[in-house]
Length: 335
Ligand code: TYM
Image (cartoon, rainbow, N blue to C red; front, side, top):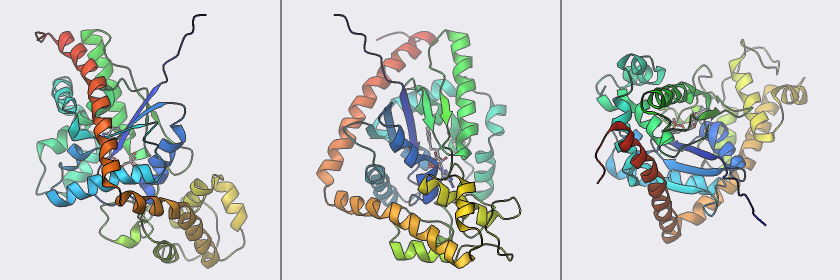
């Protein structure tokens, strides 16, 4: 009897190894990556080529890149099921990026809010890579004919651009790229800083009390939540006038799988102290196994190496298929 095997849809996503991963990275992206693993063919990469758009210490970058890969696994990405690799191990990312940059307008790139923010933050190093960053990101995604890109809210604009560039390319050269869709989780798509809840929680925050590191020990996590900025009235409810409390409720909801309203009901009438303690404990309980698995993995370099080597091999062969197609479409002579 003939059997038709349907190809699973493909996911691609990644993180920059530009600092220790935070609870924002986890709730906005990694937790969803893990949940989607069974239903999709997943490729998760460490975006070290993106990281050098900001000045990096080479030894630190090498160390952090390895740690990010280990944190993917420690959070529950199964290397038997998902493809894990370093962006720089697949040369096609840079190759496709060049072709796509010839199909992206300066005006489109000038409108990117991340570029505007980062140019302000790194005014002494507004390099061309910082400007063309979203083109490399489009290449990452389109190279693998990706269907779905699970990310936090802040990456939506880049995915919109990726879709525009892919549609334009397909229009001019004929059907070449799958048009990807973003995937944003229900809760935690934008986790805010614990100290300045108007700003996104970020791994490059100079104040470590603003973010929870995925590898922070339990007592540090609880202490950081206790110090979280709230407000002067004592009501536990979400609202635009209560960014600190809203953020804590969102974090609690994302970790426990409850809705923000359910979380607010659970703590109604209680004091901020009890509430902060409960959020801290819930987060610490979620992250304790991550830290333990990370420590185990740190002792097994050979295993980790075997994963990213195999990942690079598979990713390269998928990428090569797309590159052959792209080179032919744009009129390059086959060799
Ligand atoms: P990066 O490294 O800044 O962040 C990695 C992922 O974590 C999400 N995230 C957050 N989600 C919720 N709240 C937060 N405070 C928070 N901070 C970060 C991000 O949305 C992202 O999903 N340009 C990308 C990396 C990248 C990429 C790609 C992603 C390069 N190529 C291709 C997807 C597909 C970035 O800088 O993410």
